[in-house]
Every structure is written in structure tokens, then in C-alpha cells.
Length: 361
Image 1 (cartoon, rainbow, N blue to C red):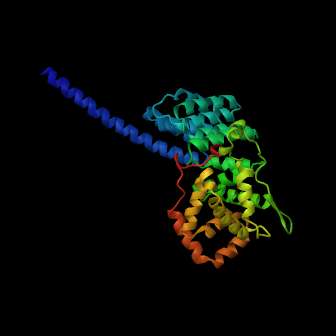
Image 2 (image 1 turned 90 degrees about the vertical axis):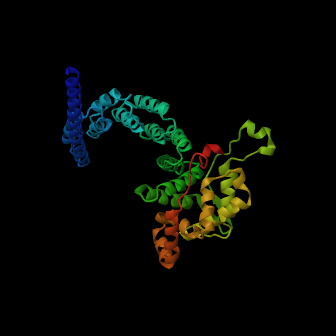
Image 3 (image 1 turned 60 degrees about the horizontal axis):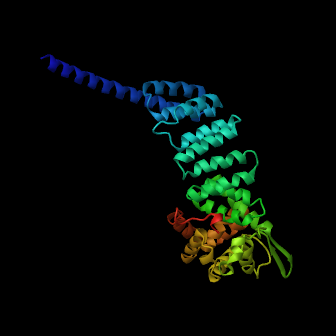
């Protein structure tokens, strides 16, 4: 009989504990939701109070730990954020975002070297995280050391080619350097990956402005293009002339561009549409797609085959020449609407086996 009573007692405890636990979890969830709303409103102290209460009710739930650290971070209480995140680095649910936030907390508190250590810890666990390479680059971006930032952005593009932010940063750096060629390619890929944001608008204008500044009509019969200054070749390149590959910018991109604008006398969104269309034709007719394959040009070919390259080119450059774009669109409403419908259903396909980064050439 005592055994039976003992058994019934254990069942009662278990049921009571489950009901109590479910009630705590529900209450914690409500507090957590409210805390996030308050955080979004900038009421960080109130948010922190509720998150601490939620954490007491459900101490193992990682989300409250992270949100509490994030609230501290937004409040610029980096010391508290760091303490909480360091304590929970080994939590089973600590993901890339944990190392991002911890690294950012160190960086913003004036400890960039410690931030880099944290990002490396994260990359040891998540080696294909474009986010963490972005953050490593951003440590140097914040100090305007763009040359040091670039390798991390490009590594992020290589390991996580679907993540747009590394393309964005790389495009901005390259389009303000002597190697604009990579900025043109990265910028357009970025626009395809992140189509409708303030950053998309920014890059559209950047690409147009770079075309405008780097293509010069020096006389009636003379054109100059300047998208690369790199003429460096390695000893290994020279050892086998049969496999010799010229530096991409000056050996492929610039001459192909020049031969694509022989009849052009000025640069605007409409003439650039013609230049870009001819460039794509020349790139493939000269066999550059075999020696220098590029996922972006493959996608442009698909766009062209479906009859939308003119609209696509105008979309890419629309924010650099808005007045002429508006005139063109008003004259081509059906063409534009057809492109938009197709474009929304046919995005560029970039993945580990189908990607572009400059070091592959």
C-alpha cells in the first residue's frame, strides 16, 4: 500500500510541476514579447526589467539571455552585455548571432582586438558564416582601414555567397579605389540579392556614377576606360604561356568594354543599356565565359534570352539617371511590367557551386 501511495504521490508531483512549469513558460513568454516591444520603442530599462523576470521564470530559455544582452547593448551598457554573453557562450543554442553581439559589444566598448578574437571563436564553430567575416571587416571599416577590411568581406563572399552585406561593403570600397572592376561586379550581384532596400538605391547610383566617371571621351575618335590599374602577373603565370591569363581588369573587362562602345558618344542610362548589352555579347563571343566564368554574366544571359535585358539594365542603373529612367519607363510600360513580373519569379541563383569572387580569377 505504501508503494502505491508513493507512486500516486510521484504522479501528483509530476502533474503539478508540469502545470506550474507551463504556467511559468507562458508568463515568461508574455513578458518576453512585451520586453521586445519596449526595446523597439527605445525603453531599454523597462525592457531589461521584464526580460530579467522572464529569465527567472524560464531560466534555460536562451532567447531571454540573448534579448537581455541585446537590450544592454542598445543601452550602451556594453559591460553588462559582455558579462552575460561570455557566461553563456557554451549554451547549446548560442549561434552566430551570439558571437556577433559579443564581438560588437567589445568593439563598441573600445576593444577591437578582443572583438576579433571573439569573431574567430565564432568562426571556429561556424566557419561558413558570412556574418562573422562581415563583422571582422567592419572592425577595420570603422577605423577607415579599408585595405584591411576587404579580405574579410571577400572571404565572406567566398564562404557564404548568398549573404548580401559583404558584397555591399566590397562594392563600396572597390568603386572608390583603382580597381573599380570588382566593385561593378560585386555591386550588381548585391542588387540582385537585396533588391528593395535603401542600400539597393545607393548601389544603383554608385554603379551609374562609376561608369560615368571611368569612361571618358577624350576626342571625337578617342575613348578611355579606367576600371583597373592592376597589371601584376606572377612568375607562375609566365612559366606556362599556354595557360597564361591576363589580369582580369586590364586584360578582359576593359578591352571588352571598349569594343562595346565604338558607336557611343555620351554616357547616360540609355547608352549604357546598349554598352552593357554589347559587352555581354562580346564577352561570350570572345570565349571569356570559358576562361573567366561569371555567375552574374550567366544570369544576364538568362535575362536576355527571356527578352528582358533592356529593362534589367535600366533597373540596375535607374537611381543614377532617374529622369531619363522615368522617361524610358513611361514609353515602355508593358515591357517594364513584364520584366518586373518575370524578375520577381526568376532571381539569380547563387550557391557554393555557382558563385563569383575576385580571387577565383
